[in-house]
Amino acid sequence: MTEPNKQLSQTNASTHLDALIVGAGFAGLYMLHKLREQGLTARIYEAGSGPGGTWFWNRYPGARVDIESMQYSYQFSEELQQEWEWSERYAPQAELLDYINHVVERFDLARDIQFNTRIDSALFDEANNLWQVSASNGDKLSAKYCIMATGCLSAANKPDIPGLSSFTGPVYHTGEWPHEAVDFTGKRVGIIGTGSSAIQAIPIIAEQADHLTVFQRTPNFSVPAHNKALDPNYITDIKQNYTALRDRGKQGFTAFDTQSNEKAATEMTAEEIKAELNKRWQMGGLNFYGGFADFMVNQETNDMIADFVREKIAQKVSNPETAKLLSPKTVFACKRLCADTGYFETYNRDNVTLVDISKAGISTITPEGLKVGDDAYTFNCLVFATGFDAMTGSLNKIDIRGIDGKTLKDKWAAGPRTYLGLCSAGFPNLFTISGPGSPSVFTNMITSIEQHVEYISDIITYLDEHKLSTINATEEAEDAWVNHVNEVADGTLLNSCSSWYLGANIPGKERVFMPYIGGFPPYVEKCEEVAERGYEGFTLA
Image (cartoon, rainbow, N blue to C red):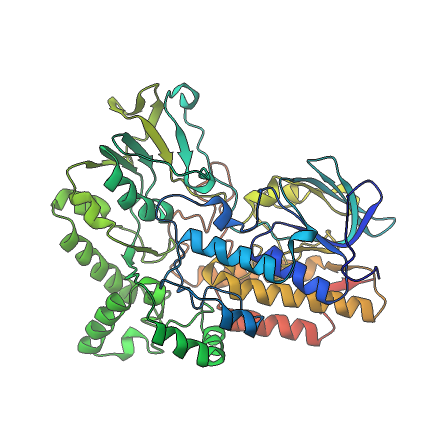
């Protein structure tokens, strides 16, 4: 083992690490801290000029977390939990970035992070059981372990629309927003997309712009966030009982406390159902997931929730035709549920126009705007709120080659294949934090990240103690896990629509339900069972 916390003054061809980490978001930062605690040399390579991952890049107007701040935070350090003060129920992007920078400074992480540098390739050297890695700045490194903390929603989806390069005004993407503020005052703005990012950005842009035209292919379910400043007494109470809150979160399906009603709608009276729906509406946000135990598997229950939300949309939007366009016809939560502040009310403004592109899509972008069929629209600025190439997009940007030179991209061409969302057979000592096949985006991401980081740490400790060099998922275990992930998804209503959960927003991408939706507690139980059996399903050499 190399010297603990060894300072890497300058990377070069001879640099060897115990572990190389790709990405300085929540996952990469905790992984670095954990490995350094174990006495390993580890280094993060990060494409951005600072830490933060999704919260470094997503700076669009209105960007904020959709899980309550007091739960969307690290729990590995009680001191950190007690010292940090959140100001709002749902922290805005700037505050989240402040928190992340505080963590970097508090745990002295920056000295082992290489910013402004992408990893171009990672090739497994079978003769030496090492990953040979090349970076965009020319660095060549070798590492025993290669850990991908590249994020589930980090590769921006930029639709290839004819004529895009001809547009004469500025073009923005919510996932790659400029660091400097963008002022839309007096501008005519077009925004493409009505997913989570758009739902947060549209009300803010509409307040500034002379006119905002929203181009919508598919409406999304959104419930009120009811964001507000946090009461100091509430913060004190949470901090005095943080352990209990965290325990409730980990026992929950989504790995955060939604004050779940354990009953199915079929076990409740009509009065109880109505009361629960109104309670969830008043609670706001993703607490809606905790309303009914059978909402993912019972069509009648799902329809009832969907109809309730549609009625609320109709009450918020003055124009019945606009309200109809904004009302989703899909299964409730088959796309990620959104939480908003004044989104639907924005369409009551005189300076906002909604354009339906579900039948006649955007045919071309022109120097002055764009065309939908024969209709032309003009504006000064164009915003893409078209989401991400989720789960696999960031990994596919790296040339990752395992045993016999097989590329991960080729292996995953028909959909990602992993064991536990953590490893892929044929790629020894390569770990994907919150990878496809893990609960990831269907949970509180930070709780899932911490579970994965600690599990990887335990694996490395086990290998070290048993004087083993490599761990590699077996194809049999991988096949069984992929089948299980698919079976669980097939048993629900949630893979019934074209969502980014299936990669359906990316042309040509194989449609496979990527996250594991069996729930956080069963997933953790499976991981623990695998470990107790000497990492069953892995080949240790």
